[in-house]
Image (cartoon, rainbow, N blue to C red; front, side, top):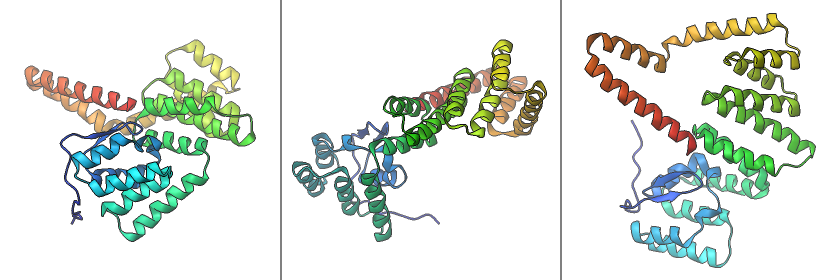
Length: 277
């Protein structure tokens, strides 16, 4: 049976838009639920008079708004600002508050570069691929030639390749994976690049990739076979099943099938828009 949470403040008629997370929130509880797993998606941009005004006017959280304004006036940091929300929300248990406090403290001791890298990774986890790519590219602009930054840059290029592959942009995915392999020499980056190459319909580009990375034709043929077998195994996936269902429906009713196809295409459009965040 699910857990019930008593809401300490009223629900807003007008939401507050979390710019850094690309998400509307309607209550303190919704913000806390978001904080629990996505704290790296928030930043100092939430520390504004507009946010405090929203708490006061929309949620009737006058005391919390007053405390947060005082923290800003005293130039307290992001960690104390978030902890005030966490403590006054009535949402978290003592252990949960301690855990989030430690996480915020860790963010204080990490570099801005490290925190932004984790933020980009969380955008990836939320399937906000274009937003993640934009964050990764900004990180690469600030990277140095230190060994640690070069290693992290390799990870960033690999993750960017995955983001592009998730959106079926395989040419860009290949380029990102190749750059990742060049920097970090991770074998999984080269394997990912080879997998993405298999989906390209450009024989010249494929041949150039194989020659550059010293991959024998028989190795490439084996990889293509493995991917083909994987494709057959995943034909029962949810997305493929949707297509089969629409195909069966078209045999029964063209009118109903047209309506369902339109609805499904709209859903896929919404998912793609979600990539941007």
